[in-house]
Structures are given as structure tokens and as C-alpha cells.
Image (cartoon, rainbow, N blue to C red; front, top):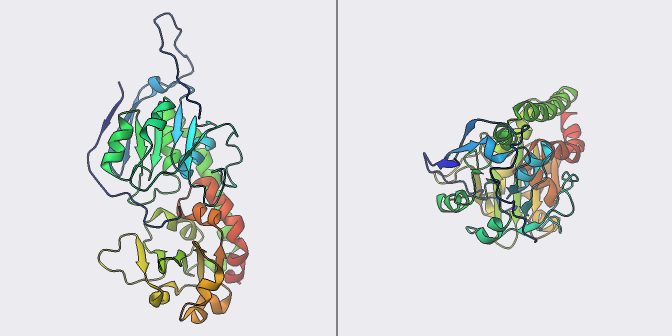
Length: 332
């Protein structure tokens, strides 16, 4: 029997705003032959909102998975599973598909990202999911409970953003394909380790991921080394610069343009969310930033920010290709 137990409640909202034909499986009758290839046993997956218990036999070998974030889609594709539907922000990708998701079938229906704090529960239910990879889309206990009423649900695994490998491991566990998940993750680890070895000058250098929102005049900075969005730099031997955080900042620091000094770092990868580079260049003190003076400032596109901000094995491989020229410049 499917069961989901909430053991602790934690906020899972990612502060950085970077962000249909229904198919129903028929009920199995006593005359049907069980799927001999399906994994068996019950597994429990720990996450930020407690734990989810999954009966592998109920999932079968071809489960109907609804993926509600880009990393959730990536986890499914990494294990060769096409979701029956997926949710995505179309800001940076009109069809909801990011460049590293080329294996996502064209006929998989897109669920538009809803207003923050809500989910289209009825639409999700219409796809008759066996498993919901919600990730940070289940940002509150209420949303999580609504989804678990439909099917076993895996929400965010980290405090704000799941570690880049977490959803792939979780899905591998759910499907009884831990070895396949490990192989996917090992491939990304090797790619990043090779880059670090090829660019030893990165060791000890500082790096930040950020965005600037001209409409609200806010800088948003990933300021916690334990945030899942910090893993990319750390695996290259880099560190986050020391940033003095207000007690209420959490993992993401949100400040006004007068605090442009929070971007003091050897490398800054930043998105102008709803504006142009000119909006950044007009900020007082921008020209004096170390990354601007030394060539370590990368004003990038939405897809690259998504790849780094909500990472997965495949998105980090993509991000490395996009950021590598700046990394080489900094490494010397």
C-alpha cells in the first residue's frame, strides 16, 4: 500500500525567482499476469518534508511519472523514463524544454507553472500518476499533502534546492535502479573532476550565482555553501566569498542595488531578470567589482541560470560548457 509520512515540516521555497490529453491506466484484474520485470519491495525516501514510502511493485516497470520541475524532468530522462507530463517555466524556453533536455519527447504534455503557492491539482490528477517528482514545486506542507493524496510524492530533498544528485538517486531508489542512478551521477562527477584538474588555477578562487531584477531593484545571491546551487563551483575547487547575512536571509540573500558589494567575487554568473546588461552597468559601484575589472563577470541567459540554480547531473554538464570560457580566464 502506498503511504507517505510527514515527520518534519520545513520551508522549501527557492527565493530566487528564476524561475493535454489525460491518460488513465486500466485497473488490473485477477486474470492479468504480474510484471516479472518490475522491482519489488518497499523503500522509504527521506526529504525536507519528512519521508515518502513507496511500494515498488505498485510502480511496476513502466510507471506513470509527473515531473514538476526541471531537475525532476532531468532525473526521469537520466534513467530513460519519459514523464507522462511535466511542469516548466516557459520564460526561458517557450516550449518548457531546456537545451539539455533534448531527450524529452515532443508529445509529453506541458503543465504551465502556476501562480506561486498553488498547483493545478486537478490537471496533475488527470494524468493518473503512479509517482510525482515534485521537488521544490511542493513548497509547503499543504501542497505536499495535496499531491500525496494523488500518488506517492517526492518533494524538495534539500532545505531550499535539492543537491544536484538527490532527485536522480531518489528516483533510482524508487525504481529499484540504484546502479543506473549511480552511473549517471558518476559520469557528471568525472566531468567536473576532469575540469577541475584541467583548471587548477580555480582552486581557492571565489564564485557567486546571482540575478538582478530591475523591476524591483533587487539583487538575489546564493550565499550558502550548503545550498544545492553552490555545488557546481565547489566541485571545481572554488568557494563562496564571505557575505555578511542578515539573520533572516536564509540560503538566498536579497538586497537593494546599494549593496552591489555583495558581488565581490572572482567569478559572478548573473542573470538580468527582465532587463539588459545596461541595467547592471548603471548600478553604483558596478565598474569597481573585482569580477568586472578582471573579466570574471558573466552576464548570462535564463537557461544557464536555471541549469546552475536548480541543478541536476545533465544541467551541470550543460552549465560547464557555457561557463568554461570564464573559468579558463580566471584560472589563468
